Length: 105
Length: 447
Image (cartoon, rainbow over the protein chains, first blue to last red):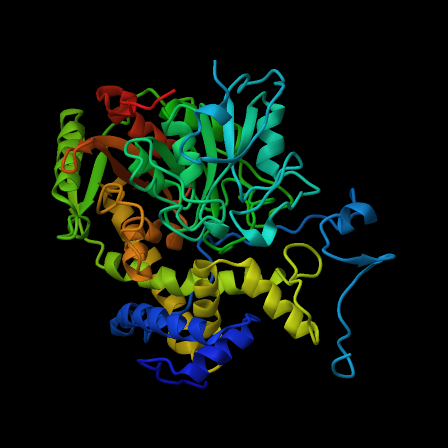
């Protein structure tokens, strides 16, 4: 597997890349603040590297319960009106969004 | 009698509901406040975020239906740190919540509004959610009982997801008996939450007032950290004496992973949060930017940047980073391995003791604005985060006061028990409450 040694100080580009992956618009000031905060947090988190986990399997979930899947039977569904009631913009029976193909309008 | 609205000078409530009718049942007439990250068809559910300003849920969380069917009077929604991310309830889009014991201090968080609503006497009890200490820590700082059940005991259906493998709904109340009464109603399998426990819930009230026989209390050396305030260590020492006088055997145990727990938590919780909060896209619900947008990415990114506060954005970025290609193994997968070690550590401990005892927090309530850097804020949860990482149950109960800062400030005693030992934990906590008076103390502002 691809293993990269974590950086001790994040670069501006790394912060911008993460913000882009996270779908967060970011200003230059945000980059400066995020870099400072995340670097401090990683300095703390790096103590985890000292724990010997070489022979340990990862544990995703705290309980060992198996998922209980209910029967796939139709129940009460939300009405179209309920589904759209919190949408910022609706056109007819669709969520309204900007054009996403063919570049800017 | 004044209304909650008039009495709430602490900003505990985001929304107060009037004209609440009550059905008959085991909770008839009990007034209960609901943390604003649990969805209700009545009023709004905002999670303390501009992202969900005005959001009206089309459905009730399972816990809401269960409370109402047993006659509880739901009085409104309480302020919390945005999306339950915080330890002070300063990170709430609707303003900071104030501690009734000293309004210049924080109530803890993230369920600060729920803790204050109970502490200040605005209602009998409250629901909160606990992902790394978000019920127990504010309960400690506000001098009330705060209970986080074993993961899967209470349905999470309708709890707005923060970190799904850690989140659990729990309670605030003045007495352990009220906690037990509420738990009897809200615990139990829910087909709408595939992680809820299919076994029958325990009978919380049956043995509550009987002393637990041959009680063994584990006291880890790691819980007497040098960063604890002296009043915290003193109160815990007194609590140990109280249990000894009640016939308990004190067992010295070691939990060496206590210190790395908080770092493990701050990898796992943000990772899950970054995934869960991806749903806020400015399209189906939630805030949408009014700025011009070139494409969908632009719409998502601007809406999210405007809708989320700084702490939420910080955690989304942290979580995105630890899950990103190249860092997944070094951070996220490694934290999952340490999670297994923490579980094993607890399993070993519970072979020699019935409960683990320590302080809920290293300090009493701190000043508003005092902890401005994220890491010092995160360290508030040093004694509570591992409970969630392992999925066991934990409770904070009042056990003393610090006089170090003038006005008395509450200290919380933290008791943890093994998976599904929730009723036993309440029973053991009740022994302390029955022989002490700390739970009866009220702030001067009490209504």
